[in-house]
Image (cartoon, helix red, strand yellow):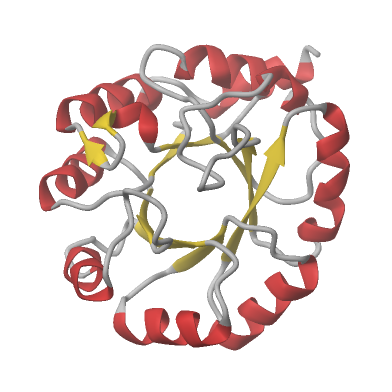
Length: 225
């Protein structure tokens, strides 16, 4: 089975079409104003309506309140929510109950100690997403072209499916999958020409590489740890 790919931070029809055409199983739209990838609701609704049923539409938010989420979910057709802030397990559970959609919860990783925080989220989130800690002074928690030590995830006993994120690009995704044992990957800055400006060519290159990887290879890496 091929590695599952999520292309996040999409904002144009051309980039979205490239992601879908190339085999991405998840496409992400950002709703966090400090991000250069942030969309207004009307633009997001237009893009989301073009996504086929075979691809999951993910809305990324950061510590959003109920009013913000109500407006988002009422306007934009989304299949999943990605919580990329400091949301507690209780908050994750409340959002799931309120909107009835699967939730991806990000976990910032720098050392093995950070992985100890996953247990509470495994009980409530549908997916986890392991991303690098943002650099000091950063105004957004993800999309910073920053990687962490992928081997920390190799053999992790996680009860939920998970994405590897942070600093991925076409040139390193194969190594990242082998090192981590990942079965799903998430990319944003690694398929851009500049922050917030997706490159169709880079999306195509990333997907060509990732779609030639397979879960069996990642699982073998994890088993061999």
